[in-house]
Each structure stands twice: as C-alpha cells, then as structure tokens.
Image 1 (spheres, helix red, strand yellow):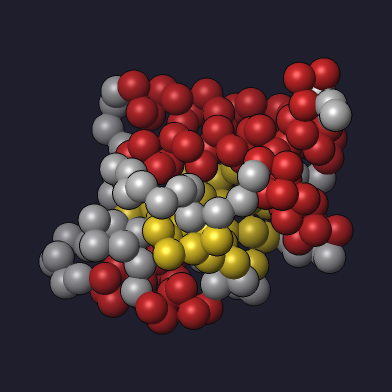
Image 2 (cartoon, rainbow, N blue to C red):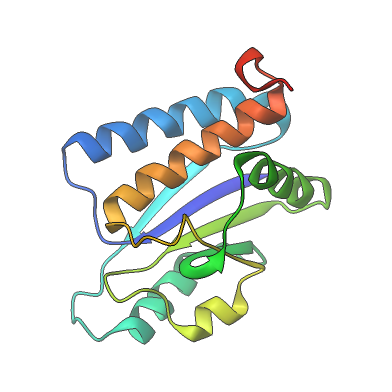
Length: 156
C-alpha cells in the first residue's frame, strides 16, 4: 500500500525537514517487507491565500484516485500507536492501494475534506505547529511499521 503525506505549506531546510526525511526513510525501509510504502510527501501552497476551501481543492487534486483518506484535525479521534498501526494494517489488508494522510494549513481543514475522510485523526488535544505535526505523523508512520514488524522494542 503506497502511503502519501499531503500537506499545506513547504518544509524549508532545517531540523523539521531533517526529521521528516529521516522518518520517511525509516518507514520505507521497515514497511517495504510489510506491504507498506513507499511514503510520498506532497506539499501544496495556496499562493492566492484564498482560504481553507481553496486549500481543500488543491489537496484533493494531490490525492491519488480512489485513495483512502486520513485527515488530521484537532477534533479527530486520538489513537495509541498500536491502534494506529492496526488501522494501517487494516487498510492494507482490505486491498487499499493508496492511503493519503492530509495535514491542512494554519486554519485547519475544510469540513468538506474532513467529511470525505475515512478517518479523522488527532495527534492530541493540543494544537501543534503544522511543521511539527508533519514530523510527528512521519514518526508515527515509522513506529506503526516497526510495531507491525514486531521489532524488539515493540513486542508485547
């Protein structure tokens, strides 16, 4: 199952980009044998600053056809890492070929995009800067692959 992280905004060179790239590499390496990956990161920008509906349109265009969708939103469901791993495995096992995880811009995601999502996920009750949310999501993708691979750190 190919995994796509689609986000509003561009990561510039710096510590967040280094971390996202590192976790993406780890996810690809660990997930390959599990039928997960590769991870593709797509960044979009609303150059006209037309708001969340315009961002939603750009994000929807970036999604692969028939991709399952996980939208990150502070109002979403919180999950422990093993439950997130099980969710990814469930999508994969159901024959999903593309899974897209979407992070909105500074004003969040439009209701239209949240309503289209198969799962609305929250990284917790606190609001995180979008660049840190991207790092945290990339880390959780790697952690999910590590859990599914049964790495020593993640065995029960």
